[in-house]
Length: 263
Image 1 (cartoon, helix red, strand yellow):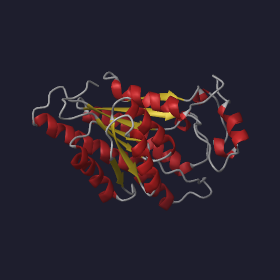
Image 2 (spheres, one colour; image 1 turned 120 degrees about the vertical axis):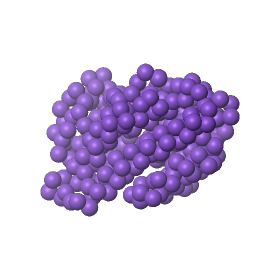
Image 3 (cartoon, rainbow, N blue to C red; image 1 turned 30 degrees about the vertical axis):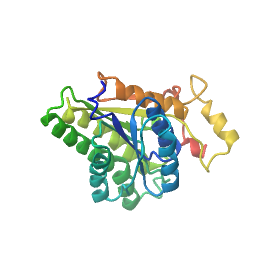
Image 4 (cartoon, rainbow, N blue to C red; image 1 turned 30 degrees about the horizontal axis):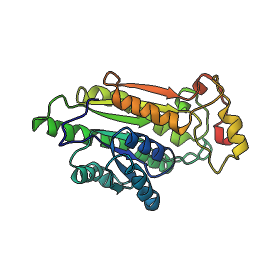
């Protein structure tokens, strides 16, 4: 993506950018020269720290809260970022709800929560970015193109019966990516990035995480830095839209009967 005019330095909104994978993505993009707007839900201290870390590389002083289960809050988010920075050129949808359920505990309520956060919010933010860029183009900015990157999961290509609502919501987001790529072209490109096992959790010991991380054709799954590099590539390559980059060491090529956290 070519750098826009000096009056509009490149700005990216990274949802869930305060911590974990979102923070690594935010820092990588700041190092690449992007102004980073850091979204958070409740982790304000981490958001402030991430913004300060990004500011070592590029002028960045924006952190924005929003509960992605609240449609009004989601619709207000991008306009808030625009009001702060003056413009936005890209959105990275990294924020994700990840609560366990199986088919024995499936409920409408948990599915709706996942769909709102993991699929509904990214669609609304893509819509808002498109409207913003259309308005800028109408005001005279030439060769203007934005990008949305949606964080998916290799689970979609290697399904198991764990985390049912989460998986359904990510499947919905993957389908939405295809539809959005068609609907928002040529103004906005839409690209998926699907990591494998990348970060440990309270459900895995460090030793077990290391063992599972090595279970791939390449002998290693994705690191946060691998995923951030793929996001940066997706943002910069003007010929990519409507597809997904699987960044997982080939884990999607293998068969796992259970989710990693339950193995």
